[in-house]
Image 1 (cartoon, rainbow, N blue to C red):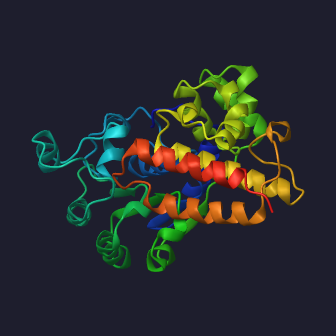
Image 2: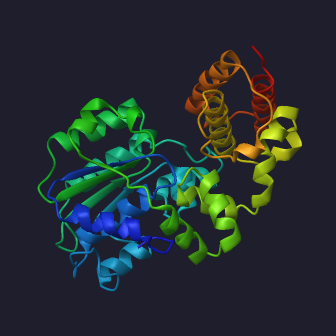
Length: 333
C-alpha cells in the first residue's frame, strides 16, 4: 500500500495486529521502524474488499483507491508538510491558502483538519466496509487537536476505527494512550535489515555500515543513502565535530543533524563508561570528553529536539549545533 516495498517485519506485524480486535491502535517506537507503513497496511486491511489473514489484497477497487490517495472511507491526519511529502492531497481550503501565499504548510496537525476528521467519522461509510482514521505522527497534535480526537476516541461511531502512529509516544496525552491498544514496533534482525536495504539499491558493501549508523533502523538508513551523502564519510563525523567543521554538515536537514548529534553523544558517553559504542565504530573515536561536558550536551540536545521544527535560520542553527558539539567533545575533567 505504500511507496516502499513492504518489509517482512512490517508484514508480520500487520498479520499480528489483524488477529486482535479493537477500535483504536497506537503504534509507537523510534524513527526508522516503519510506523507509517504499518499504519497504512492496517488501515488498508480494514477497508479491503478481499482481505486475508495477512492483510489487504492490493488489487480490489478499495486497495486501488487507497493507493492513489482517493479513498472516500479513509481520513489521513498529518501535518501539511508531511502530507505533501507523502503525496497526499490537502483540503481545497488549505491548498488555496498555501497557493495564494497566505501561509506556509503547517508542521503540526491543525485543529481544522481534526474537526473535519470528527465530521468524517460521523458520516456513513461510502463502500460499506466501515471507515478508518490514520494519524501520523500523532505527537504533532497540539493540545486543542488532541482533545478533539480524545472525545471521538471516548465515544467512537460504530463503524470507524483509528490507527495512530508516533515516534515520540511520551509526548501524547496519557488519556489518548489509555484509550488505544498499544503496539511497540518490532526491530528487524541485522540480516533482515541489510537484505531489505540491498533490495532497495544499497550496495552490499555499504548496507552493514548504514544500518549500524542508523542504530538498526532500516528506514533511517535508507533515507541517508537516498540523500546522496557518502556512506564512507560517516567515519569522519566525530572528527569533523571535534574540529568544529560546519562545512562538513552543509545542507544536512536539522532533524538529521540532531539525530546524528544524539548518536555521537550517546556513543561518547558509552565509551566513557567502558561500554561499546552503538552507532560509530570504536576506531573512529579520539580523546575522552568529560562527563560534565557530555551530560550538559545531552540535555541541550533534548531541548533542541523539542523545538527543532520551529522556523529558525538553518545556517545559524547548524553553526550553533556544531559549536556545541565541539565544546562537549573537547571538554576534559
